[in-house]
Length: 225
Image (tube, rainbow, N blue to C red; front, side, top):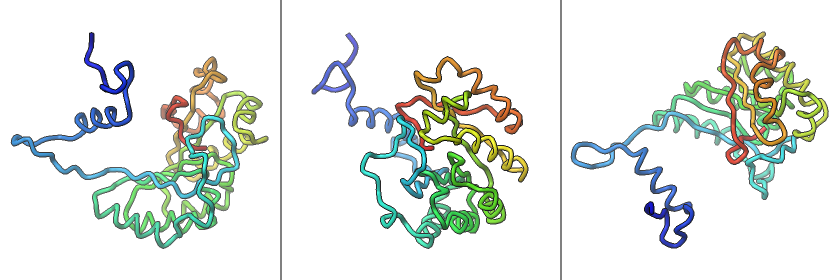
């Protein structure tokens, strides 16, 4: 019989035990057995919990933080500067839907000023052509768009937003038009699992991502958007 994960619950793991195992795997030790301090490389900034979509697998908490509880532009800019001082190189602007922030362009500018490579993770809904142009001018480096399915009707139904799929296609083309790197995030679940191949080869998106491989996520760790 294998060693149980948790004495309190021998048949399954617990959060504490999982964290302990992950910590022992990731923490590197010097020859004397002391932990080696490693610099963080990336920062995920959840700018808002607001989102126009209603994806059932979304990892947003059920008790969403209200708009008035969100960090303001100046605070985010300070966080980005402090992150850069710690050694962070990459920043991922996420949510919710970052496009719900009216100061998104200013936030991106603050990230650029801090010297961070900045990736926007978006559902595409709320990122208009003018907003994208402003983000590019502010120094945005990359865009990741989520798709719910390769079939437009199914994708809109999963997202709970009519016309969402068409907006994703349009933003993909606009991103490439600005010569920004584009990646795609596709969450795989029982509704679309039979069309994984179609999502990877989706002509309207695939032609825009210049051979980049889309990221496939399982619902248990599904991102936003």
